[in-house]
Structures are given as C-alpha cells and as structure tokens.
Image (cartoon, rainbow, N blue to C red; front, side):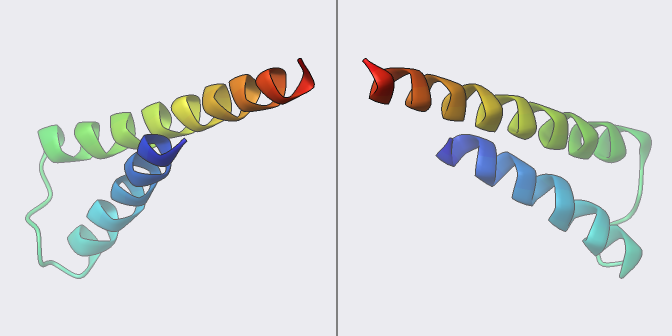
Amino acid sequence: MLIGGILLSVGVVVPFLMILQILEPGFLLLFLSYAASVGGLLLGVLGAMFYVRERQD
C-alpha cells in the first residue's frame, strides 16, 4: 500500500510541475505520470484487499 501511495503522489506531482512549467511536458513524461497514477491506484486497492483478507482469518 505504501508503494501505491507513493506512485499516486508521483502521478499527481509530475503533472502539477508541468503546469507550473518546472518540467517540460512531453509524451513520455505524460504517459509515465498516467501509468504511475493507475499503477498506484491498483497497488493500493490490492494491498487494502489483501490486508482486509488477512485480518479476517
């Protein structure tokens, strides 16, 4: 879940830095930001699901 939270944060911070024109927007950077956001959400949900399942046993 921690890695998912970090990836979600990166997926938010990188586009914000592009809006502020600190980072130059490019296709690869936009794609990696989107992939980090989606991957972080997926890892966070899976981590929460396994955590709940483990606590129920």
